[in-house]
Length: 352
Image 1 (cartoon, rainbow, N blue to C red):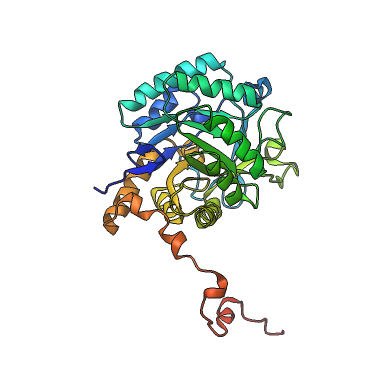
Image 2: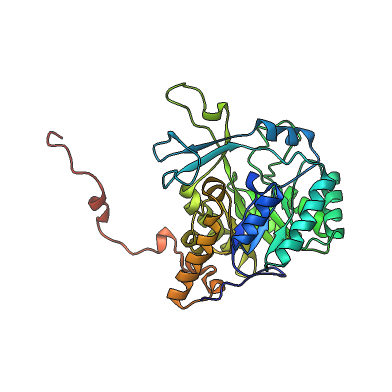
């Protein structure tokens, strides 16, 4: 077996596969299932104080979209290449009940050499900081602070936040890191051309890791009804996003250097995808949509497949980090190939 241990700031993980937050990680049974499936870390579904965000969970809906963009049945039998479109919401329980469950889940995770990570999503600053302080006081080991949800423009005003300014990212990160002694992971949006700048601002303000880059908003017209699928825009993610996440990871590594631990998210559906994100610069990789769609075995297989890959390459998982990113060249650095482009265009029509 390969050595799959990785380091994220001060935090050691037994493997880099993270069960990322979603509705499947709202209840204790789901969290325990992810832990038992062998994930190195499990991030519980985010919470905040907004009643509108809680109400949105009762309006939530989900669609599995096949390779031709038609809807397919939800579940493990969905075809390879299925995309998930959703409009989501936050847990409807009050913070006291949520925190009590988080403490219990952390205790369960410790017995399985797993890290349980509570997550707060920004609505307003003061309540977010109060929750964070209570999380630390309760003995939780790490905090994820999500300031990059895709839903802010579609949800009720003030329910959640999509922070697009590096300056604002720095201010919010510093609010947490100056008040807390536990590591803070900042989750940022991918709906920006400034992802590396957002990451740099978070690290400069004391973040121990940056999770990049959250799902984008998407809208798909239904050809039969001629209305949007799910009646609105929603968060969208799938295997096709893997190269985009890898691009942001590599660009951020180029800006930040090799000493910053990044967590890749959005696009990983297998252990080989975890390896790809790590080669692009991630120290660990979150998986959510594929787990919601197909079940907990996704996590177990990802760990097993990553183990096999690393063993075949005679490498530890941590040795993968950034190898492809550091080997990346610019277009201008590539050798001339004469008229190679001609091999990749269709033959002209006979009458052309």
